[in-house]
Amino acid sequence: MIPRVRQAVVLGAGTMGAQLACLLAGAGAEVRLLDLDRGLAEAGLERASKLRPTPLHHPSHVRRIRPGGLDELAGAVAGADWVLEAVVEDLGAKRDLLARVDEALAGRDRAPLVTTNTSGLPVRAMAEGRSEAFRAAFCGAHFFNPPRYTRLLEVVPTADTDPGRVAALEELASRHLGKGTVRAKDTPAFIANRLGVHGMLTALALALELGLGPDEVDDLTGPLLGRPRSATFRTLDLVGLDVALAVADHCHAALADDPERERFRAPDVLRELVARGALGEKSGAGFYRREDGEILALDLGTLAYRPRRRAEGPAVARARDEADPARRIRILLEAEEPAGAFVRRLLASTLRYAAAVGPEVADDADTVDRTMRWGFGWERGPFETWDLLGPAEVAKLVEAEGGELPPAARAVVDRLGTFHREADGARETLSFAALSHVPVPARPGTLDPAELRARARRAGSELPSNASASLVDLGEGILGLELHGKLNVIGFDTIDLLERAVALAEERSDGLVIGTRAPDFSAGANLALILMAAEAEEWDELEVMVRRFQRATRAMRRAAVPVVAAPRGRTLGG
Image 1 (cartoon, rainbow, N blue to C red):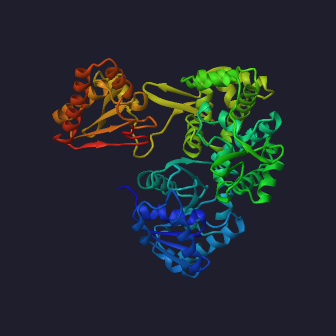
Image 2: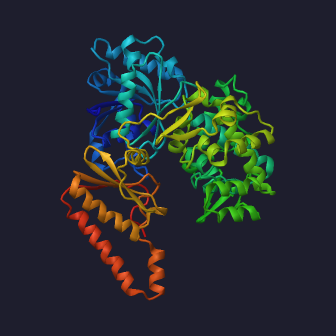
Image 3: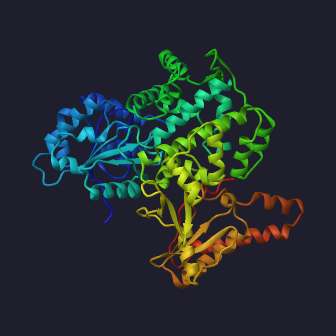
């Protein structure tokens, strides 16, 4: 049975606590939201309900949240399934509050799940001195902000955490909260912030050294490198410069043995902006500022705002027109212009650091890659980027920039060839402990259509496919139609497989699921094909296309078995 939460208690009604209460209410839980007093809890919930985008799945869900003061803690946790601590990022304050939770739970046969939402404080230190039952039920659960919309959840167990409670939390978060969970080791900043803050501070240091502005760096570190459009400095503004500075300071203080500890020493420009109150999006100014409808960028030298500009150079222009991600990055790496120097030094530093600290923060390369994809919106994690460019090629880049190749990367370059590989239709990844490939464990509630097709191919039972889509047996009597074309635009190939999928499902299955592993479910009709037919005045061809699409959708609507769409990203847009 899938774990469910019927009663939850959130301790702390600040930005994260109030939003976590909204997230749990949206999953059907009755939530007690407690702060120092009821007034503070009510104010925190009111602020959260006014955020845009809203943390509430539906306005009515706010009625499932009951604000209160910490004087109600004992009664609140008595019947709870999950207690989430989300107070200020201070170890002493968290320990004191969790001690009160432990005391309130004394005498219960089985403690509820208890988690801390710390972004990097030592989880084991919070459990020290607590009862055996509390320690078995306690772990870190680091939600990224905003928790309703950011997919990543870092689960950080201690040596005393019951493995069954960890597995239940992962399944609950995956099935009911829409999270991608990763198990992180209890190290400063865990996985995402350790690598993410290192990368952002490296980009900031290189921008200062090479004379590039935030806007130019964001132009280089966004989609050109397979990263979100918010890139580096826009992301810092969204996170909050005060939050970024606090995480950097925590890393610098806690990473005494890290060879790159000084990289986490925040530069003066970041401290100056925070001192001025220029905290980013929430204060109206940070590395960017909106003025009279125009977005201005900060000059890192003068700290004055100026009109935005893009990165310049012929290589950057060619990279913008290159669709293949490996060729696009190589164009930038080979460029003899400031943009090329920036990208070479940034990738050499960040990819080497990921290989160096990977064994410290996670068990394997796949965990690190999923963390960076889900937490920071990267198209490919650091080790997927090593594989994309070729580990031997990246090793040369690292060494050319004066870096030493870490043991994990050396094992891949000298013996294994790649960090990830396909073996007999199953995906394998590098184990940092064994320095060899191990199978990637199946995640709860997930199916890999590529692996299922590979199994069918080996068994001689592969189903029809074409360039746009593939039929796949999902098991338990369910047929799947996986879309895998460019933006999954709908043309004749897609329509053909849709019709065949419905017919086959009616003939020998109990249902049909239409989905994709691509970022976008479907951008809609193949407008380029329609335009070409219209310009050629091939009206009969256009009418056939429209009628076939109508026939396919009618077949899905009238099918004798359930037909379910599993959309994501852009869905039937223009």
